[in-house]
Image (cartoon, rainbow, N blue to C red; front, side):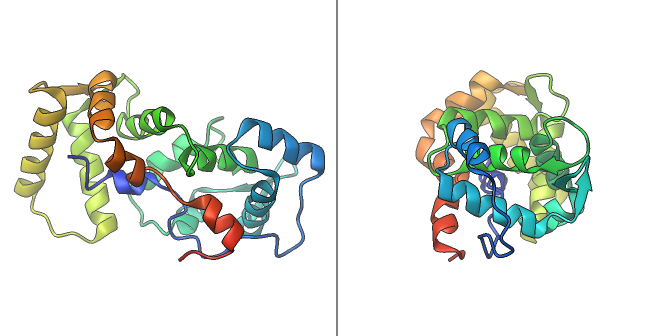
Length: 212
């Protein structure tokens, strides 16, 4: 259950380079603040800042930002509901752009040392479109369809319905919706799988400079 979709909860899976190629560096005070509020050390913050500046094309109030199209390209994702949900989750102030702080905070949550419970909460919110604290069959179905597009899978509507119904039954104990407690319990019982699917080895990539 959730195997088709959870692996895509890891942004930056397709990033190929990191670094400060153009010499954009944060000042020491700013980088230290990010070290205190994220799971990254100073060299990692600087590396991610360099990458962000390399892909950011626009400025809002003199601040470099990335829009939805750049975000989609950076993650290597297709046009789908999934990219919409991910963008909204990163864009915490809802202004239609992602600044460096929002970018860093989102990536921090999903790195190797990100808190598991926070990763579970984040992934639940990706599915919970309307924010009512429940995942409905419709929400799970739509996300499943989006993931099928991303993965170029060939599933009929009937096969999708069987998969979603089985997932709903398993996670919700036969209910019509999945609560956060039920989702969390399922995640805890499948901790190794969830951890692997919701973690991107961004620290390794920051320091290594390339994705392997």
